[in-house]
Image (cartoon, rainbow, N blue to C red; front, top):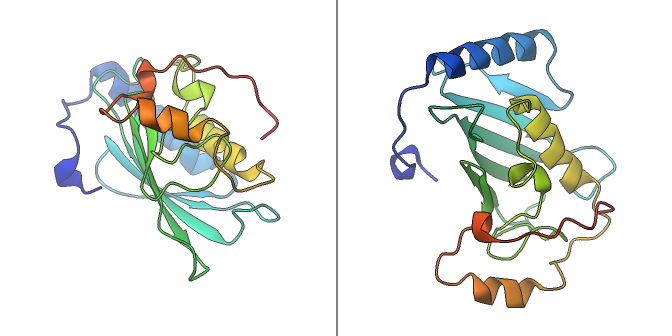
Length: 184
């Protein structure tokens, strides 16, 4: 997704600016393992490099997170674009988008038991459990943890039914998710 196709953003509120400056300082002092913030002059957009965890199905994969913050962050979730760059030539390029709490992988979505073929992700912190107490670091770690804990690359059992019900542009935020499986 290019920045020209991104939704128009309002300037950050004073609360959002203060919070992001604090998070950026914390990140620079104590970055989460496996993540690197690429310095830009735009506080409202962060570029984060992510390395797949060793010993997982996503090992040796490099990711680029683009995090765009809404006017009222942290009361609203950030928008995140993730570019997967695989070191294996047979793998496809994947993306995901977090749009004010809506998270989807853009095609082709990676095979994962909590990621539907239309890109919707079943991860509670992106919906019912979003909290202003969360930080960029905690969201990044949660997404990487979800990917890393998977033991198989496969679609959810109800993938076809769910995707069919979402054909008319239904947002994952309109879904009544049932968060029951924390083993994958």
